[in-house]
Amino acid sequence: MPRRRPPALRRRLEDEGHAFATTSDTEVVLQLMAANAQGSLFSPDDPLAAALRELKGAFSLVLLFRDR
Image (cartoon, rainbow, N blue to C red; front, top):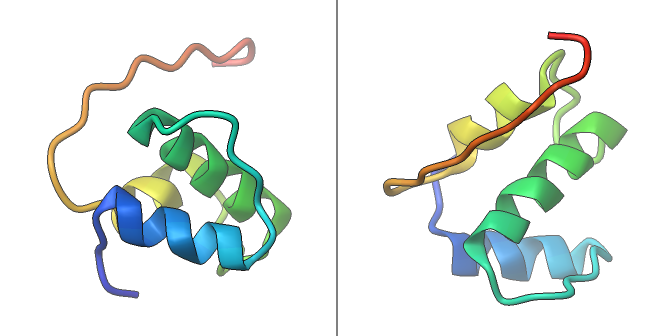
C-alpha cells in the first residue's frame, strides 16, 4: 500500500464511510487505527503500526494505552 499524506487518506476513509468531526490530521491517524482495528483495510495485528505504515510526512503523536 503506498504511503499517503493525510488529505488523500482522509478522502479514502470518507469514501469507506468514516465520518470526521474535525479537520485535524490527528483525526485521520485515529480513523486509520479504527479502520485497521475493524479489519476494513488489511487486518494487521497492530492497528497503530498499520496506520503509521500508511502515513507520509512527519507527525508528533502521544498515545496512552491502559494495557501497555
